[in-house]
Image (tube, rainbow, N blue to C red; front, side, top):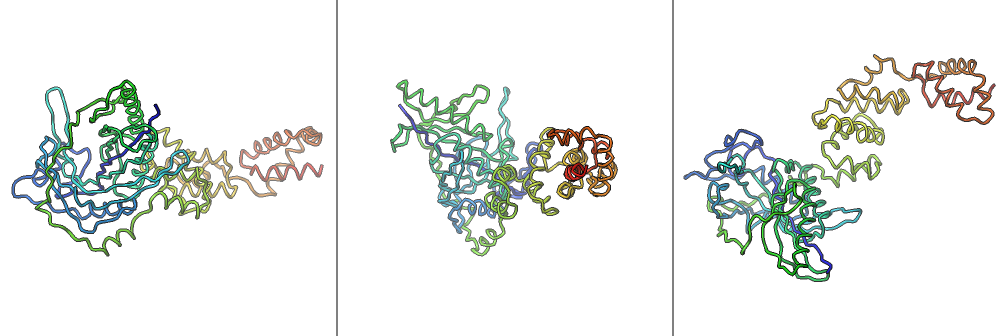
Length: 474
């Protein structure tokens, strides 16, 4: 039997704010346990929540970039359940009135575009973090109350590749907008995937399973592919799929059941009594939208229009916002867009990756790379010389100073070159004869001799042209 995979995804994204959703406690990853929490986060009697305005602004950015309809009337609800990671015994969320709804994004998978619909984007507060050890479970409340948006798709994806492409697309959008840092490995973006299969041609959904807390884009694809195979084996063996929650075990490359789902949990939602409905100023929303940073698609269009870069170059640059930002900084000092892109993509990223250095921490200055690129374009240094200079440029040095110190400036003065060329030709009469007898490799030899006499400073292009002219005279 042939099956079709049906996938829906819930992304939980911590918002990039300085303080928490409903309190003034700081947001700080990696801080000492329970050092970034206050009485509001812990739900002490008599405390009242106060909505973080910046969190609402970031949620509006996310809704706008994903084509959602924005609800300007902000309302919150209580989601009631009792668990050790929920200090108040309830979570403040937007169950009935999400700030965004009916959106979509376009993903690209193997050259084909697909529309993934978003059911909703809602704001809520994060829970605490638990650590399970042999002697007990420890709770760090630093994460409790951090602002979140949850982005819920429709069941529009049909493969692990599509799901991975969607998560990558969303992470890039949110990172470019400054909404979230998207660091899945740190838990600031967490992914829950709902997976089911059904016979090809069937419109009825199969029984879905949920894979919780996937911590990388590659694991999203791997976990889905593994779970689909497991479900196929169950059905082909005559067994029913049980609705349950799973986790993905990277070591065994298997999905492991965590708990069965007997039915929907009754969270006894009701309107949050301590946060009255808030009517957002439509002019404020409009101002946020007008001042939004570029999203990847906008930057791609700009690179095509302004710089004429190839699709490959653009895809590599915009895949990492920090790399793209560095390229933009370089382009403030040069007009050689293609050459600058080549040096960023090929040479710079290669060295940084080799040394395991993030571009945001690199010593290289954009203005220095731009200067070097211009010198290459003007034939002031050769490509070979540039690679030697670049070793120092990556360490933060000015290429002009490096070239001056090493005496590497390329000789492009025709009279100076002619003197060297004629000296070489006088010494190599056999090579002249070889070239005239059809041995084209003789030119390469003569160019090499000129480079040797000039200590590598002769302009190769001019040298080649002048050599041919002088040989023709003999």
